[in-house]
Amino acid sequence: MSMTAILLTLILALFVALCIFMHRRLNYWRKLGVAHDKPNWLLGNLAGIHHTVSYADISRNIYLKYKGTGPFCGFYFFLRPAVVLLDVDLIKNVLITDFANFADRGMFNNERDDPLTGHLFLLDGQKWRSLRGKLSPTFSSGKMKFMFPTIVEVTHNLVDVLGEQLREEKVVELKEILARYTTDIIGKVAFGIACNSLRDPDAEFRVMGRRSFSEERHGPLVSGFLHSFPNLARRLRMRSINDDISDFFMRIVRETVEYREKNNIKCNDFMSILIDLRNDKKLRGENGEEKCLSMAEMAAQTFVFFIAAFETSSTTMSFALYELALQPELQERLRREVQVTFAKHNNEFTYECLQAMRYMDQVVAETLRKYTVVPHLNRQALSDYQVPGHPNYVIKKGMSIIVPSVGIHYDPDIYPNPDHWDPERFTPEKRQQRETVEWLPFGEGPRNCIGQRFGHMQIRIGLAHLLQKYRFSICDKTEIPLKMNVKSFLVNTLNGIYLRVEELEAMN
Image (cartoon, rainbow, N blue to C red; front, side, top):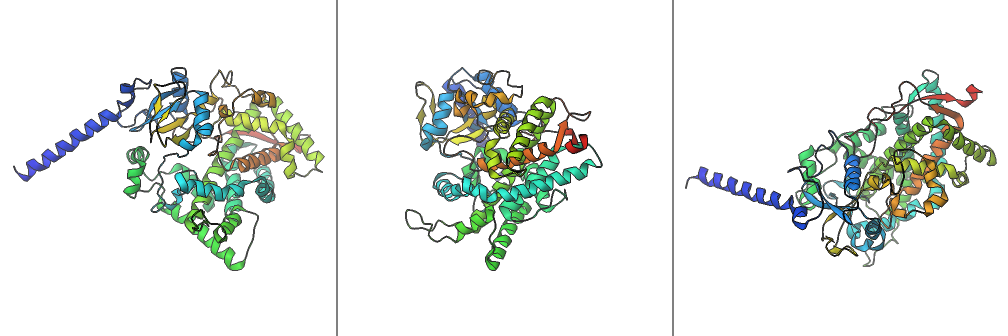
């Protein structure tokens, strides 16, 4: 047999093996008799993603289509079989009651070759537990008070910059200016650096933050491989973050730490807390190993803090102002609460003001329901799990699990008329009538969002100061309804949010 024939035979054999593998993978749920959509041979049940549908569309549609068919339905995340949870009791078991079996996310990370992926959101197992234990005190109420004055300072700058912009144009695109605002907050709190992006839209931190969401290292084929085979991708030393973005954040953290340690500088920010953890030799594990943070771990945590906190908070604020502009009577109700709160504290915004604004909490909670920024949660089974009360439903070891947060938030049995924005859904009485897992913008259980307090704080501070000073209303450029960007994993608008903004004092 010639070398050419041997080579062709090997290629054919590999092709046949690949076809058999693909056939078995994509018939997994059919053989088990579990409800599911027919998968695409490459994208699984993500056909049309980034082109005609978003992750939020898919999560919501699958949940609403198959709810009631069983405790979960089948799904194919690219070539990886997964389950989408449909039952509230099962969701509670996975996130809270039986958390020990579902502590991992099973997502791609590669600390060695792609150090910024070694952050709390992506890590699993003992590494996650150790890091969570180190960082949890960082987001306590005491530490929030520590960071509070910095956020208020940046918020005053936002109010001033918006006022300057209104002298030239009364119609404002809120999404961008609020992204610059939260970028300045995170830059100051996480890195101790004055980013100045409110006054300079092309500031380096703003550019890098924008690119972190808009530019992917790989195309859909390679990205699908990373998601379908994360362990293999790690062994192949693959990376997911662009080199220049990784280099930028590693350099900023290294230079900041070296400068502060050399000059013995202490600040009221996240970086100072991380430096203390890095230098605390008393932090030791059960086996005596040092638990203090490495420089790479510090960079990874500040990176995820930066990209998660600036985008989600600015998006939520812009959606809240949009809905308040559509319902001006609710905007006035919230403004009155803000004004009364300021007046009770000598016209200054203190940390105690956050607890006093109850209607503000309802507004933010309803905004996070309707505009679920992170459309689903990921978990992975550590061992086989038979669903209680459903002997024919077993989540196998290693199986990827999707909790469709956006589907739950649009379930008419839980939230009647779900497309309507109504803060009255979140009165204390209404909250008590629902399970905690029926509102999941920050997750639930031991692996909920560690930065939830911080996110709530900067959103409420920003909205309070803006509503005290300005009135927001719709205009000719306001999209009704908003068009969403299907290319974004996070829920976001395609064309921004344009509102007319008027200074209250000038109107009186």
